Length: 259
Image (tube, rainbow, N blue to C red; front, side, top):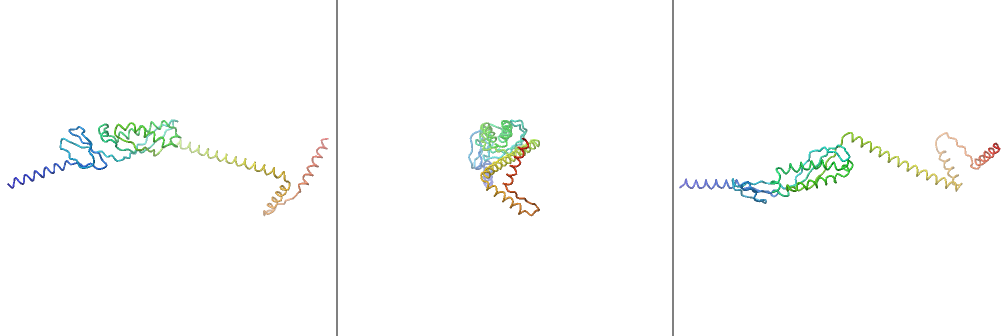
């Protein structure tokens, strides 16, 4: 009798171990796929699920957002400039059934698709567009990858370009162009300043010509500025009337000589 009880308890314990060993847990951030005799049956929601030994199996898929650093890609822009591009891809699994049944390795397939698309899209933009409109290039890559990866149950969330690496020769050329552009702007600014100064001088000369007293006052101010300078400069003050008289005598003598 005691042996029978012992065997019953042993059998119950063994059955419990077998049953417990075939309970599978699906976490909140996962989806479970149940297969019976190798054929897909249904998706399993988060929680505990009993899997019949030998007959059934389960595959779990993480549906959280994944971040993939895409390998640097050598690409040629629309204007034939060789560049090296690096980017980051953000995506998640939207349909766990397709991610398992439609593609062997959805993560590898998605990253490979993004890398080849990146090379193709870069060739559609010039270097200036690539440098100044990275978001536009990234959006174009995202749209193309999204269309192709949808059949795998993958949803593309975002593509970001990290670096656009140029050859050293191109960097030197761009630096020279930037320096030339700065010099050009400085020359234009200086020229505009000289034009404004010349216009102001012309206006001042016209105003002083209309008011002789103003010209005398300006002359006296200039003499006062010179006299305040600690130097041995000697200033001879000659009235304008004397200069005009001398100019008249010179003109008269010139006419007399010519006659």
